[in-house]
Every structure is written in C-alpha cells, then in structure tokens.
Length: 81
Image (cartoon, rainbow, N blue to C red; front, top):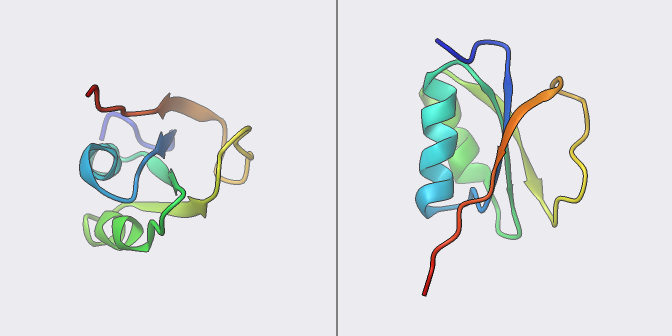
C-alpha cells in the first residue's frame, strides 16, 4: 500500500487503460477520482471490489476539488493513432 491516503485523478477512466490505472492505484491504497465523459460507475464498482475507494466525475475536468484530499498525481492516458 505505497499510496495509502493519497488521491489519484484519472481521466479517461470509464474503460481501457484509464480503468486499469484506477484499479492499479486502488490496489496500492490510493483514493481514486475516476473522470470521463462516459459513466465511470463500472470502474468505481471494480475499484470498490478491489478494496479501494473513490468517486466518479462524468464531465470535463478542469480543476479537481479537494473533497478526497490533495491530489498526488493526475493521469491522462492517450492513444496515439
């Protein structure tokens, strides 16, 4: 649990590599903010099944709020075409 009590903000978290980042951070103890234009409810459910906690944000993320604490890192996975 190297990231215990830290916050990880992951955009593009509804599926794919963004979802995998959320799960990896949760397994390491981070609170996860899963953000996407699509619903992140399935990602949050998987995070909770893995023993983690967090929240979903279904909108464009401009400035994260401090509800969970100060962010440790923000991940914006992209796919090159």
